Length: 300
Length: 280
Image 1 (cartoon, each protein chain N blue to C red):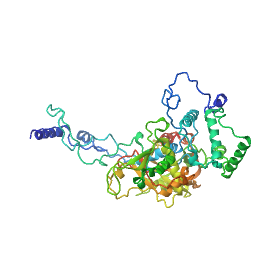
Image 2: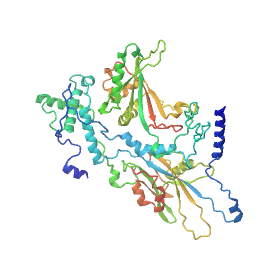
Image 3: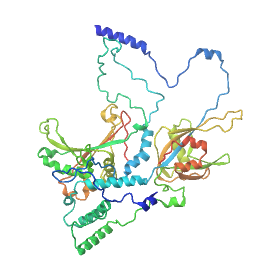
Image 4: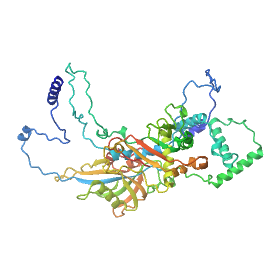
């Protein structure tokens, strides 16, 4: 009984301490004095803002970043420790005794050990006759040739980088690159992301998809990452001298990935397009636009 | 920078053996010197899938799971009466928490840069029914998993590396299992080993697997509070035929007594309803 009384007293105190309230995202300020003092002036209402959906079409890196000098030293050191400490490799489990594959593996392993521990490592362990060593090497080379190991790897720098071919999707393989379009606005060439208006009753992410295809052609396979915009940009008003207030221009950005194909912009409206990294975008777009989009773009 | 380094000394080549200036104790059994510092192995090569996560997937995961909250969250509603801490009579009394399963009831933590969905570990386990008759039947399975994952007990001097672990029966079910009997093996992969396994899986195994239907997600109709819906774990199984598709095993498939299937769990840090399947 006592405990119950205590609990009810607790409840009463709590109810006083925390009055029931809901926090709303937009709170209506109900200050009667201010509304009474200032009679509502019938000003001209601002026109509805113009909403645009823009797509930041991204091509993700296709090759790994080049390790820095420090990273290379670190990885070599760690690989050496690992090689020194690893459990003995069960040769007889993986290879048939005296098979060609085993010979090849042993030769390669010796090469890797010399690279890790210096040229003097394990030089005097077992003696193999010269004829046998030469025959082994020839057989291993033959095997490597059969398996196509001699084929050269693709270079890490594509020829599009050398040619400064900004239309190529193969340029800057280590970086995230983005599609930028060049259009004429008021007789001035500007660079911007693919964009377009939003129709009535259309959702923003659907508008973004439609506008992307309308401006860049159907010849590509894209994926819009989320239904939420990743950024917003409000254009600064051009001139405030005119008595008629300009409608506010708001652009919502969506992130998208290009999976296949290539952009083929409509030549009637788009004069040029380019796949650019973040740093290259900064040099082309207007300063105001850059401030709006720079945090959306990836530094990698 | 690299030309400067190559002109002076290569950073990746072995220089010379360091002179041992300090007396090292010797292992009594092997007569090998014991280093006076614990030697650990860490990442020994750049990891392609990890790079891919950081350059591409992390951004996407953040955009897909972000929930906008206009302000700080209100304190949780107290639905149970609490003892008054200011009252000396009830000051130190224990306030029992609300009972019942809280699974999926709590809202997910607010979206922050540090809790973007990421892969924490991959857990593989497999049960071998024949091990009930003789536990030596597990040896082939252990060897196969060691080959696939490259994990071993305290590998690389890490005390957290548990390697392949034996799973023993917990319950007694007549005619099926008894407590304490080894029936299966499991292995947890983290870090570079995890990404290496993922790379092997998605590049060698899954594309060559016959009638692979994709990774099943819990159906839309399943309860939003069920463990599979809120735990952030994506699971699927591989049939025994898939074992032969791992390149480490493909080279000498005959060396294994039979092929084994396995269950694979991708454990992410997602909680609540923010479950996301990051298949690359």
